[in-house]
Length: 340
Ligand code: PEP
Ligand code: MN
Image (cartoon, rainbow, N blue to C red):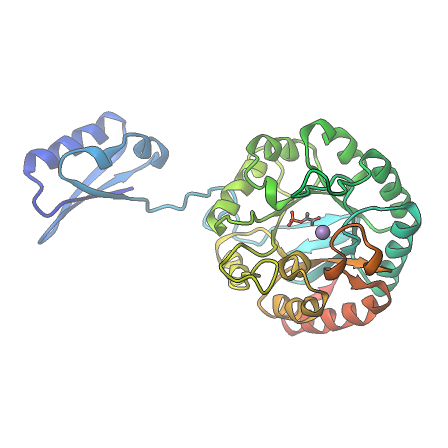
C-alpha cells in the first residue's frame, strides 16, 4: 500500500501515520517528495486497508499497489495459463477452444436429446442445459429441476458430451454435482459468496459467469472464492453487462476478454447468446470473441426456437449448428487454437 500525504501535511502527521503502520508490523518506507510525502507500507495490504488511514489528519489517499484479487491473478505463482480436462476435453492453455452448446433449459427429454445429438454431430465440446433457471419473474418457467438432471445424465450417456449446468441454490449442490461435469454459477449469483465457496468444494470444474453489473476485478475476486477452496479448475465467462444501450439484451464487453487474458491465468469463455439476446448477432460476436483471444464459447441452441420456453430469440437453429461450429473453429485457428 502507498499512503499519499496532503501537500500541507506536517512532520507530526507523517510520524503519526508511520507509527500507526509500524504498530501493525508492516515495513514502512517514508519517501519525502517536492510537494507531498508518500509512505510505502510493505506487507499485509488487507491489514493496512483495515486501519482506515484515509481518516487520519494529513492523509490524502491510500493507494493499493498489489491487485485486490490474489489467486486468480497472473501476478502470482501461476506463470503458465491454467489448463484442465473436462472428460477428455482440454480447457484453457491457449491451444484449444471449447465450444459449449445446448438448450437454454431442459424442457423435455426429447427436446434435450435432439439438441444434444445435433451439437455433438456439429462438433461441440460440451453440452449446456439448465435444470434450475434463474428467472427475472417468479412466474416464468423455472426449469424441471431434478427431473432435468436425469435427462442431462441421459444426454451425456447418449452423446458422450460432458454436461454444463447451473447450480442455483446450495440445497441442490449434491444433486447438481452428481450429474454436472462443469458447475455453472450464473451471472446473478456471481456475488453469492456462500454459493461460490460451496461450488469450490464440490470437486468439479466451475464456469463462473460475470455479474450483470460487475467489474472484471469483482469477477476475479469472485473467482478467488472458488479457488481458495482448493479448486483450481475455474473458467470465467463474459456474458454481457448492463449499459445504457438497449438495442441488445446486454452489451458484450469484448475488451474484457484480452484484459482478463492479461490479468488472470484462468481460461476465459464468452456467451454471445445472453449478451445479445438475438441469434443474428451470435455468429458475428462468436467470431469476434475467438479473434480477441477467448478460450471458448457457450451458446444456446434449439431445434425449434419459436417454441422454446426460455430465450428462444437468441437460440441458434440446431440445423445451422454445424456451419456455425465450422465458422467458429476457423476463427479460433487464427489464434492457433483447435476446437477441443
Ligand atoms: C444461462 O447461461 O443459462 C444463464 C441464465 O445465463 P446468465 O447467468 O449469464 O444470465
Ligand atoms: Mn438462456
